Image 1 (tube, rainbow, N blue to C red):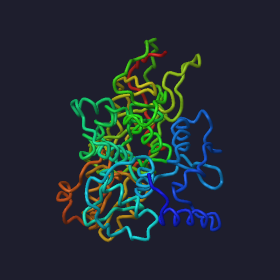
Image 2: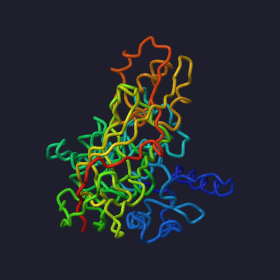
Image 3: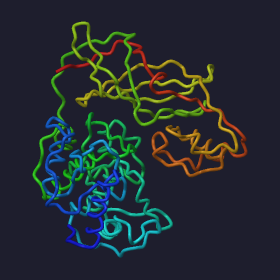
Image 4: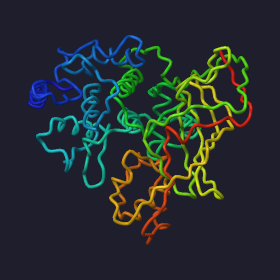
Length: 416
């Protein structure tokens, strides 16, 4: 915890100024005595309400001058550092360093320094911290596991197999996330079996993670929530069999980007969300909205296109089923040429690793963030394949219209 300091005075002054200038206030208030304990945009049935309310009572999180919490707003690395240092009091583990992009007069300077010296957060090569970078969910969990000194006592791969999108977890994050899973720090909404590791963490999600970290370290009482992945208490519900006939359409969506780019020869992992309830003719919900469809985008050689092939359906309850379903073949292309600006090409897009390598090679700009790549794969080894090419045609997929799929054979699911 911080005591009163010049940094706090500057932060409080910044908040007051933001009320006048109508700019966004920092994530946290410096003075817990003024913290809100309820928010106009957090109803009691909101999934993260108990986590947010508990942290606000402790002065760890706070709202905005208009009385809202803005739970879906994205969190930056600087904001997360500030929250960490409000939540945890820990002795210094290593010497401070001077980050090139964090000036001493930054509102988050002291929070960033403390989060580094206590082992919660680290920087990037060249002594950069990237304070304004949105923080992915996997980085939040890695930070908490590292900062609290947690290591996995079991087989990492076996633990992570509990998550149906485990293949998307970056290599550096696998062991810490396995440790966080064992400590019941992981909270996944709306589907407890999907970690969404590369998605940017929201204010609500960070509040849930940090509260669970406090519980794991004996600093808070456990909350009963169906979205906490209770590692040692995974029990399936009793089954009631229902058949979903072949030909049934599963409406899906993909919230991470407006466009997906892959090469014509590329297989890329992809997880889609069921957009609407799939119901029987008697009105029973057999596939709830929010369920996940796990599969791959695969090349269709003779049609020079790509097609989503489903492998697994995971209901919101965590139940899994093998699924044979496929989208139509997508043949629309986007041409990337030498001289194109990388940022313009990939705006609002995610890419397969090969597509990312192609864009990097053709444009000459290799600074493509891992969160923009399906599966979090590295692209360095693939860039040479496209060396010297002046242009490349990529399959351009619109998730909202191109990936709706049809079940190929009868699927039997269980209902409660």
